[in-house]
Amino acid sequence: MRYSSRFPYTTVLLLGTALIAGIVLYTGSASTSYSAEAAPSAAIPADQAEGEAIYRQHCLSCHAADGMGSGNYPAVASDHVKKKLGTYDKAYEFISRNMPDNAPGTLTDEEYKAVTRYILSLNGVPTGFNDIEKHWAQKEIAALFDKQYIDGYVNKETGTMQFKPDQFITRAEFVRYLVKAKELFLSNNTESEFTDIGKNKEERIYIITAVEYGLVNGYPDQTFRPNNTITRAEIAAILSRSEMLKASAQPTFHDIASDYWAGDAIRAVQEAGLFNGYEDGTFRPDQRMTRAEAISVIYRLVSQPQA
Ligand code: HEC
Image 1 (cartoon, helix red, strand yellow):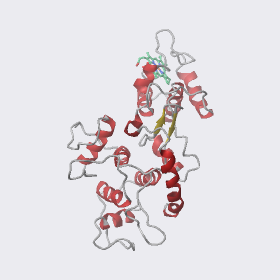
Image 2: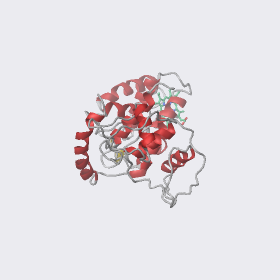
Image 3: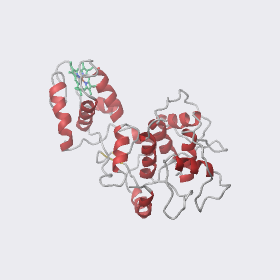
Image 4: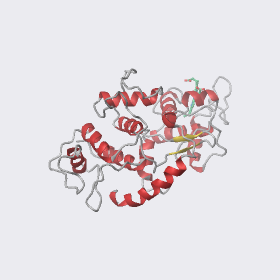
């Protein structure tokens, strides 16, 4: 299915989503860090069963059945674990590298993932989005989440996590997901000329990295405007830079003038198969992108065979 054909109804959804977004707990730039206050999940969902089985077989000999620790071995469900390993990537990294018995590679990647999800669920940390089921971009969102390229919004009250697929993506989010998806080396720099990129280290580092790689610019007034939404033309421009794409012809969209600032970039991303126009022959450069739309573009980017 082509992505352009889905736009009309996604656009309709946007309004509604924008309205309800206001009442849902919004963790903003801190979205990747889970709080120690997250409520424990009441029950272990069925898909955790595999992780639990692996835990029983490979981890129980040292850690206790209820995860609370025994003898010389620490608990795997505790405030300490939530603080130290309370995100999927941190927990996966620790467990697959140090456990069991400092013997990395004892389990398969899939087994480590399953047991990581189980440990996180024991700690009340959400391990998946609860709002992407049957969404048109479910596959793309789930795939990039599995690779730890993207993150969502944690509701600390319910211990659940949403992706908010139909919410407009922000500049900070897009840049973070792109830098992660391209697996760029993160900058060592913590200083930045931008006056508005906040104290959140996680958010800052991705913006600084993207600017250093020349993927994206700030504004002349030394702002980055991380929470601003981002248009199709702007994303096309970023991707044409990040992928070093060159257009071979002029854009043919009705709504792109021959001297349009991002004309070459738009043509280039279209030729590269990353973006489509609309069936009516327009590109709609000033239309903002939703998180799901942006993720499906990044998904195409990372699923393409390496040139
Ligand atoms: C041979 C004994 C042993 C086995 C098997 C083992 N662990 Fe551990 N685990 C330890 C020890 C010892 C520590 C503490 C040392 C450390 O942090 O590296 C620990 C620490 C941890 C922690 C961090 C706890 C904290 O408070 O920091 C987690 C989470 C964990 N293990 C998960 C697992 C999982 C999941 C498995 C199965 C895949 C597993 N362990 C298998 C011995 C074991």
